[in-house]
Amino acid sequence: MVSEAVEKKLYEAASKGDVTTLQQLVQEDPYLIHGVSFPCSRNLLHIASVYGQTAIVEQVLKLNPLLARSSDSQKSSPLHIAVDQGDLEVAKRLLLVAPEMCWWRDDQGMNPVHIAAVKGRYMVLAELLRLDLSPARERVHRGQTALHLCVKHCQIQTLKALVEKLGDFVCAKDDDGETLLHLAVRSNQLEIVRYLVESNKIKKLAANSTGKTALDILDESFRDTSTYLEMRRILHNVYPLSIVEHFPKLTDMTMVVVVLIATMAFQVTVSPPGGVWQEDTSSHNAGRAVMATTHPRVYKHFVDATTTAFISAIVTILLISTGAPQVNFFFLAIATYSMWVAITSIGVSFGVSLIMTNPMETKSVGQIVAIVASVFVIVYVLLFLYFPIRKLVSSSLRRVQRLQQDLTADSDNLPKHALVSTYVRVQSWLQVLTTTPLKTLLEKGE
Image (cartoon, rainbow, N blue to C red; front, side, top):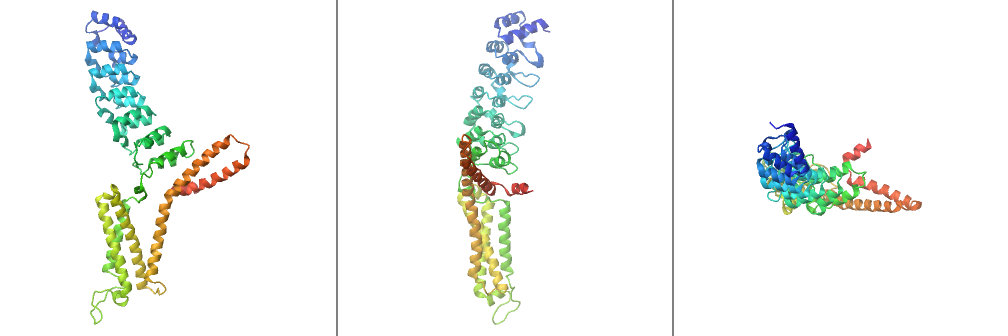
């Protein structure tokens, strides 16, 4: 049993770096260093690490290297404490003796790499990962990585050090599907957003478990902040990345639509409009379509449109079921084109059916095709114009913001102020029409 006086001397020697006193106490009692325990179940290495006494750490490691592998009441090893204090030299000594402690987790579930990420100890972090990057890939609460911790605690230097070493791990998601970009936008960290995008570490805006991208979160949360326009400009550099993003995503709903079109096309083929003949005569055979006899030319167009719709729907179903359109632009273009052809063809088939079964003498097949095709062309053109219009509105708003800043210093120029105010109102309404989701508009209307 160590006396209170000796324990106090030992604590003072460890905290002040008094190697001579430490050696004297050990000479008097060679087992002293092995059995002494301070508050929170800490040993001499814990105390020396707290105060950054490298000489004491070296001396204790010579006498009992096993102390580097022991933990206190909070499950923190001496390495945890050295990293928390940002003491590179002490961390180096401890790593030489017990490198496996990089994996050890404290009672918060964090290893030394996680602590370095939270505290921004990027120089210590580089030393921890010099031999093995695996501890940095370990996840903490809710699946967050060391990279997520850097973003949450605004440690951009540590984030840069980790990103350079971990590569593609920068795109990792936590249990909520949140990427680094989601977290950076949520906490309104413009510099981190700029770094992630401009360094080309983020290739596209991923959606989280609720289907929202970082851009969606920005529009919902930070419209009134000074960083909103700049952050939005940066995010637009990755949204969309290429023309692939302009095509509709082939979701389960798309599959439902093309299956429905294929079903409709099959049904009208076996049960054509106007029905089928029930008996054989000199002019027709039983089971043949009535309209094929009474309106042979129009019925031919009907069959062509229905066949085209069925085949196009089947092609789309096959491509979606393989998953190829999700990873290859060529297959995505084919699937999207086939879906559009199927929709257009079933529309034409519907129009021709009306001609055959209803008195529409004023409408010809060509007119029906022109009407259906015109509607779809107008819709597609509007969809493709939406993206450049939205980009144009965003750039105009940035110019207005700069103009407002310039006029701040010229408060006496009332005509210019009035002009800018009017322009801002117009641009704001344009922004609402081109960038605000319908749900948000309805909520504002209420």
